[in-house]
Image 1 (cartoon, one colour):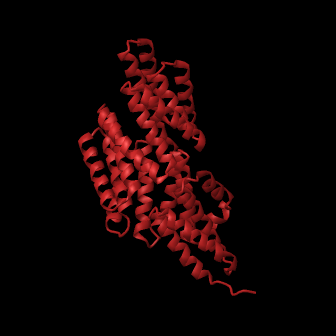
Image 2 (tube, one colour):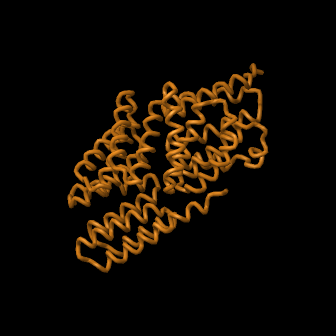
Length: 369
């Protein structure tokens, strides 16, 4: 019989693995997972350490955009025993990672409900970076349901901690972008643009390619909302060049959608058709019904004025309760059809946009008090 590995040794390796995961270092995190898997069979069996491994494996799968695998791991864990655990860290990670998984499924209020349960334990975790990570993630979720002041409060806390920590420049840049996105929603375009550019400079200085791409992507959105379409196109093309090199498929799909949208608005149909098809192919590969619907919607608005296809795409977004997207796209449709003197469609989609904005307010009712 071989010598058993002390559980403390494995637990330390798990702590180091999680640190690398939070640094978004996919290559090193993958190597460390393989090392840990090799020693697990020889470890003295301690249930909490095995739970910790599975929880971190769920988080690792989120990092590599393997969302289905992450959810399967969470679903397979015994939630009753996890909730009954006296280990605050285990309880915290279960609720926190469950929240992250729900966020990636676009169940934003469900994510916040998990985060708020995690919040009861986060203060007991003796790790400033972990508290920053928590504030960063919940700031993203509050942003998605237009709770801008809650989002800003958590993002500013996260930013202060990330800036004070080594090796987290990418997270500082990403957090700065959350603050800028909130400023954008509050129509503070100058402030938002300045922060996005600052984030890009920070990411470039620290050679954080993904954060750099994210900065250009968000800057493109800032320009698109102001109808500065040439600048928006430049930003999305820069983002795509980086993202395709990084092989980040989900982020590539988001940027492809936005570039297609800008090209359609500009009437550059040949270029738009190329990116539209590329987006559909990537949506199919990733089984991403949301972005397939959004691509269909913008094509139906700007390219072929297909009311039936437009309504079908909007129905998919309503089914997923993506009220921000519904409001954004219907109001864009209404403005376009008004320019085209198609007043019936303009009136129809303005009404639907107002209805969707009213639905946004109901999100807060789904958050547990």
